Length: 150
Image (cartoon, rainbow, N blue to C red; front, side, top):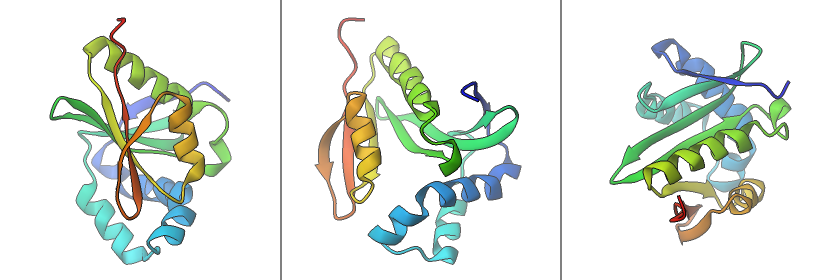
């Protein structure tokens, strides 16, 4: 089950990606800002971009979404969402390790943000080398600085 593939998202993945995000994030968003279905869907439609979105699959089944892009010299992680039933299988760790390897090769740092109420995600990012750079009302903004050893 640990083998996964990643494919570029297509316009037809709008509802699928929303369902995956909702499955992974509902409780955290509800606890933090409150989940309002119509607003969350509208925000998702506005943010939906096949340029930065990839679908993570296990045996051809969509199990996650990974959104990243390069902006202002940084790799920005806009989202990493894994279906709850596929969490703790190291899929997210391997996706992030590949991203870190790319960042080190390209000599770029990585930026992301995590909801303050999502202690599990914050601990995950800290374990793989991210540090809190700033915080807002709802988010920790985190950075991974590329290794100068590469």
